[in-house]
Length: 147
Image (cartoon, rainbow, N blue to C red; front, top):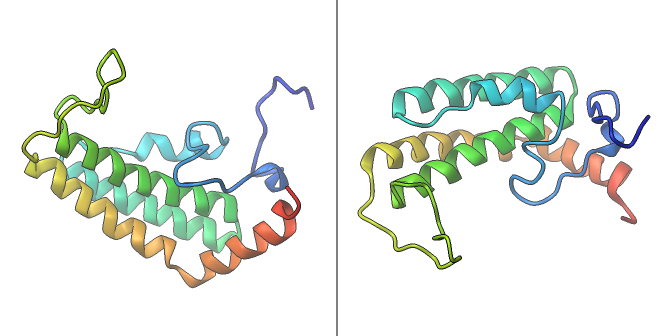
């Protein structure tokens, strides 16, 4: 495989690194293309539909024994929470100004805060799923030891 070509992580799960938090969420294919189209958090209604779809996809990946897909779905749910919280605190969604200084936190936007609660609940459910945790441990032992 050419180093410049994207890795198909479904065919090559050994190339997937779990990472911290949301790392890799925009790079791991084909999952990015499958999940990103369903990721929305602007309103609680969109967040509710998005979180439900992402959880449904998590379950489908689990049924297929696809840990990488499960972990990526978990990351999109986590990212829904973190982005909603960021916009709840800062209307622009920006944490830093052009000079790199931290922008002040404003009055909390209740709409974005509700979106964050929706994603947080879904994220907690999938990250505590026993089969997910078992597969995560197996993935680390099989592919990430010694790295």
